[in-house]
Amino acid sequence: MKKSLLMGIVVSILLAGCLGKKEESSDYNKPALYWYKKIAESVSNGNLDKADEYYLSLKSEHMRSPLLPTAIIMLAHGHMGIEEYLMANYYFDEYNKRFATSDGREYADYMKLKSAFLGITDVNKDQKLMLDTVANASKFTMRHPDSVYEPLVNTILVRLHMSQYLLNENIASLYDRIGKEKGAKIYREKNSNSPLNLNDIDLPERGILSRVFD
Image 1: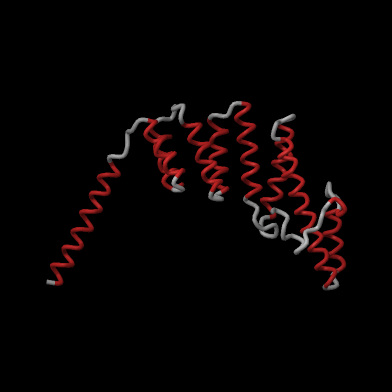
Image 2 (image 1 turned 90 degrees about the vertical axis):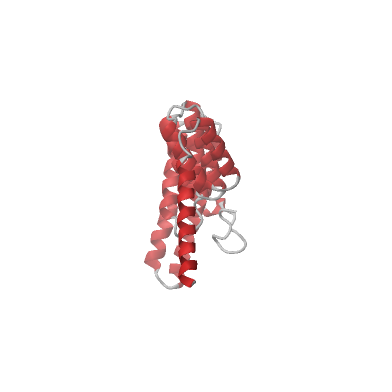
């Protein structure tokens, strides 16, 4: 009896797997609009993994579809919405490589910059990302002079410089407390090259780094 029951369960699982595969295998060679709607539906439901899969189908089956650029931007914003900034940047890069006009590239470059900035969650651990974002923000202002996004990019730059300044000052103060004057001097010298100075910065009330990105 037990063997029969186990055999029945195994057969049921195998049948379910076969049916699932059959259903999946039939989900191909669809019109571009079909995949686009699937992407939009998945993004709306917060299922970005599925949306990514549908994008691959749209891309592979309809390489020249006019729906592709909009789908890419939709996916980039979807990933930003759930704080998956690396994936968002992947799609902004994809857009720039394949479809960006001058205005479109300016927008995608700005959104990629914003995505990188939002991805900095810990100034102690994300030092490389901070430095890369500062460099990319500077490149943006050179590549897109008089951009409508320039005030926002400048805000990002100021906040990054402020974060770096406060971090250096915090480390220098720590070295002061443990009697490491040479270490404190190194970090204060780094701040001497900053476009900001301590008088430009309103220190947060609770902890020197606690509200930099609030």
